[in-house]
Figure 1 (cartoon, rainbow, N blue to C red):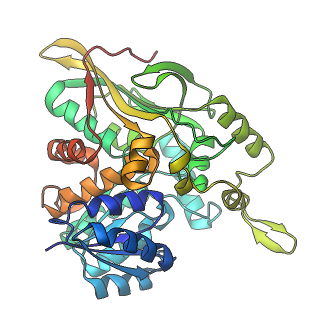
Figure 2: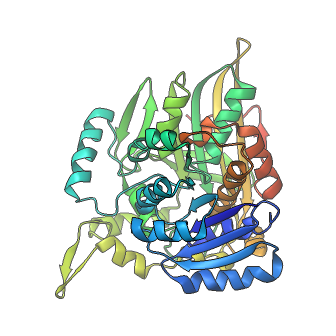
Length: 419
């Protein structure tokens, strides 16, 4: 019997929970917990008539280690799935260590308060030593490696699509397609249209922080940082068409550079429409993307959190969104001394996702891998002491699960390369 505690009940979590309930022979019992228990209760009521999985719910403040420990000790799960905010990664990891339970998440840690002196000192040291200035990186969670090893526990980091599936694609390419990989380009294309002038496809605060940060990529053993949105390319995406894409910093570059050390260059590109970029630049220019609190009419507010309250809830985009996503990795390298190139990717349809689980494809492409990663851990296929990213695990059973549960692979052995 497997018992899983799932922390979070937003758009991605709702997809992951729905998919867990489709695999009741493994996810026999789940507890859905979040700060707002009514959301958990509503999802549980929706799913109970269509699943054999036993569903319970709980209220928890994931910023509080004490509350998390109390809930984990009461429920006694085999695995904690963190599908809350990346701000809460460390408190949930601390609670898992105290309660001796395995852990997984979908995005690496970043701080909510970027003015915290302790975090700021370590951040500035990292910027100087590594050469990139994005707020999010793996260092805070990698520091837990020995703690999880000593406890004989597994912590799986970033098991969404990117990060997550993209790293599994890289591990698969290294295992089966190439002897040596020279370059990796990760391409994330959302060809969907939700009809709003401006909205984000996942948590606005996290999304806008990511997009507005300076871009960076790995080349010849070091980071190269560039101004935000300063490298643009055009690419023809299967089932989507020609789209503009921009080079961003993204967390999986950091772990891939470590775990596939022969790679000479790793880049990440994401597509954006001109309307999105115009709105974002305007908001940035007037200070609405700032994370530093300001005083307004006698109370303290954080501009980007206020903006989040004004924007459409990403979970509400499902019934409005049409079109497809296309996310994958293009590789160059050698096999048996012969130069080759290869592209592995997934195409996902927004409307089909909504028909299945009531979600748009952005949440779907993150929630399904979260369930499949948990499946790997509960089956014992991805269990070993320590802290790991997805490319450090066997990609074969994971990719087979993705094929089965909604994110099948497509492959091209002669793709167009990105300039």
